Length: 117
Image (tube, rainbow, N blue to C red; front, side, top):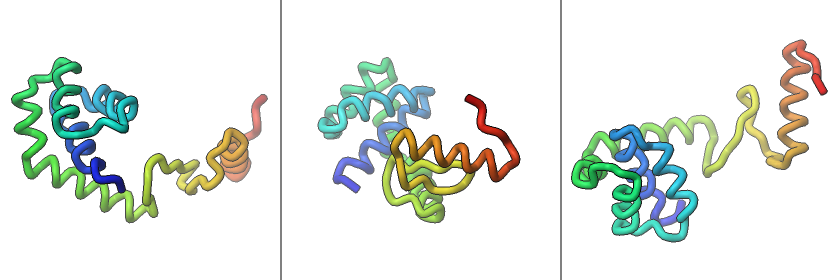
């Protein structure tokens, strides 16, 4: 993981406490080279968050605990980076369009479904 992964995760989880997890998520990915604390705080303001509350949430133990739990869940599922994709519970190693298509078709076939179009 990169050095700003944990602060970025905390920023998103803290934003989620105000109902803006996905909005923060998107901003973080759009600005993935600018993830200093000051920039994270700036993004929180631009999203219309209560920045003072966001800062408090960013530093609470429950935000860290949520990240720790999700990290453990990811490791248990053999996820070692993002993005990691699964199709019907099977990790996708070929992440091309054809890889997704083949995995979906195989999954449908295994379930007795048919390929449509």
